Image (cartoon, rainbow, N blue to C red):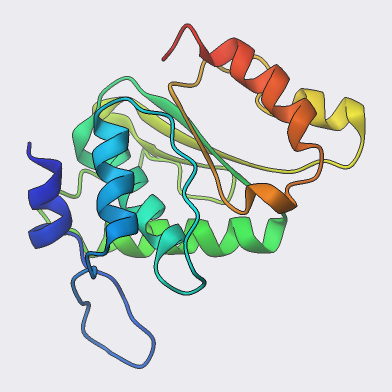
Length: 175
């Protein structure tokens, strides 16, 4: 129930060159991100490179989708398909390292690069990438009622102004 216990004691990361999953390293950035999120404060996180910004966001998304929420739709928006695929793989790795009694994944769950689900809790995490055309950008997230929108590399997402204006308008009710 306590998300900070989850981050400190439960979630495990597969680190390069280490066959054993390790704990996430707490720093000001990820602690602030988690605290702000759970206190319902919209957050833009800027950190030095390679200090765990994306990983912190993925741990948060994993907690929400797999344990900490019910009936929740969220979106992960990235700058391109390569980054989306890497983020999805990291989310899958984090989930696979959960203790068996917390991993609610079944055959019914979607497990691809378009969305991840936790059917047991009725949670869905959709994915999308930036769009160059105005029309394509307007369609990102259109028709979805998203409680949570996470954007990785926001400064590099094509069409972000158009995407945010159409995406967030439909998400206000869910939030």
